[in-house]
Image 1 (cartoon, helix red, strand yellow):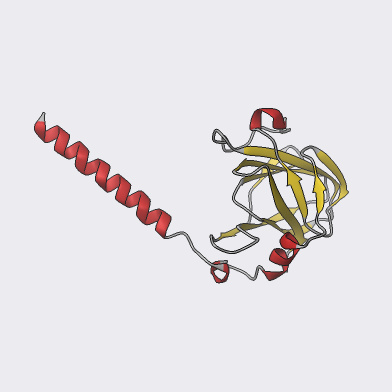
Image 2: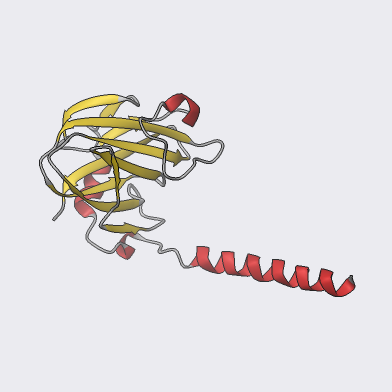
Length: 171
């Protein structure tokens, strides 16, 4: 019995150490993104961002960043269940884009959250992802290949009740 407790204690210590090491490896600073983010960062921090409530429909991809209001996940009425279940105490929301021009787009967020992009009834996977902590105005950026069909951008797992989003043609 004593041996089992020592083994369990050792495994717990190793698990905590591994988790701490992984968290320490997360990039920190604006220079740690995998591609230039200045254009996205400027859009996300622009003072004239349109404010949208969760569920808002947009005729086309916005030419500038938006600030999307978020609500509790159970109130969000996301059109599709998120691929990752949101944690308690987080926020969710969505916006629909009715017309899109096909191409590669960069979707960037001002703070951490899970993104589900749903087009033609399917979850799209990003073709590239980058994120870093300690960069004012931007937390993560992803590249998606969009067709010319409408799509829904869903946010879940956000710590705050709003966040800024930019959807810009990739450079």
